[in-house]
Image (cartoon, rainbow, N blue to C red; front, side, top):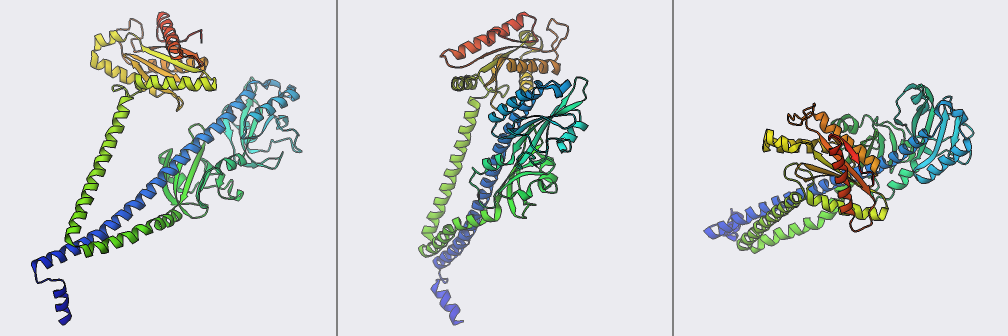
Length: 517
């Protein structure tokens, strides 16, 4: 009872002011503890979110690198196949093709070797300086695969040990067929596993962080930082294959790795063209340890602030609460202004009707592409597209239907399989444009014809075309040039407009290239 009275008197609980101070001090203490816990929780969530973004960004960037690596290899294989006398491979000029393969190999740093095999698996040409002891590869998986399958696409096999040098390589092969469609042999490219090992070593990762190239069947092609013992190990039971890739081609998730049973924050991206997937994983326990170490000063500081707040009393407490509220409001206002500014920037570069790039973004992108062309000396192609008889469409169906038609055509063009660095824009009215950097006239004409075919195939009704089809069609004109002059943008647009005009004159619903390209 005596101690109780001492505490009661020390805290002045017998007065209204004392009770108020005690109440607010207790409330402040609880609020301080709750706020510190919330702040630390948010800090950890942000650390995880940043790691998730880093993981998916790394996996996407490396999927692009892998896509480029295998695409270069595929193009080399197709070039070789086109130059072969497939009806009688045994008659090919060994010296000439050895030189051709060696030259191609020198151009592509990822290649270990290039080989040509006849239908019996005998090596007929190689990029290597010496012929291996075992020069018949009819027992290899890729050879058996192409003998059984008649399609002309490439095949990416599991990692093998080269019989020529003993190096670990990824076989990339393509079938040779004779004029009757029969099996005539295989053209093989081998990509060095060390190429990916060397490339992945550039990234600054922690000891247990992971960067991997896998087949979609779950087979390991290469994993940093693991030894070569894990290569060709099958991980199809991993959540990546049983759960994540079944739902989406790229993303992030957290699971326990099958290789070493370490929990990681993973990002993954499936290659668009090839049956491969790139995975980046960050060690979650290590992330927790780093976060805890970095947050230790915050923990100490929060404790000191709580103690100081208890000593300074109600007035300081109320001021602190006001400051926190003001900071929160300012942060919310700043975020809102940032969001509005970002939205305005996007709106300034997008067409309000179709959602495509607008004329401003078109002009900026064209200028940048021509400047890059002047440096690389690679051509830039421009495709101008115009909806045929659009005025008649507007007059007959009305302007609301005309706007719907423009949106539909824009969506059709947007679905074309273009590269990430190409730009589709609404040029004005019923006219659209496609800018294709690093693209020559033949490839541009191919894209233009795809666009014309796609719009025609959509069968948008148009009763006033004056033709027998009565559907909306487009005409397209292409022009290509290599940047370097001040008036390149004007020349490019005039050249494409001229080709478009020619397409209109010759009957519309077609794509033509300017012969001056």
